[in-house]
Length: 105
Image (cartoon, rainbow, N blue to C red; front, side, top):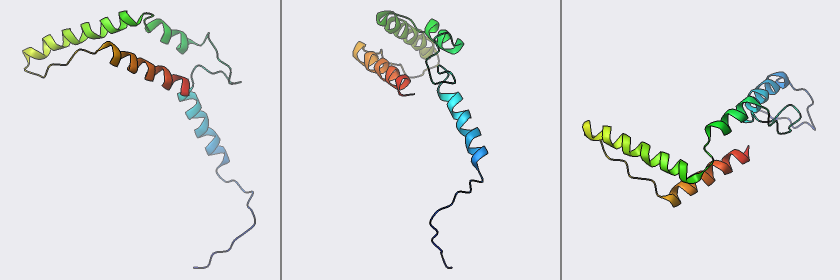
């Protein structure tokens, strides 16, 4: 087999397919950005997210631990393992990672 080195190639056979795939990825990972790349605070997905997200860390942490207590009660009936309560520091780290990952996109 012989290879030939050429100075350049300006033929792009897959340009349309690449642009379509990039648009799908953009639509998936950035629902809060509009076409110009600006934050759109009136975007439906954005407002739904913040309505579902509680405002107080203590409330969130309490809801999580109460859900664990309820789950543990049902797990004891079926002889499943008990889930440990989440410490406040572990929850703060988790929340910081979630916030960091949303800022990344």
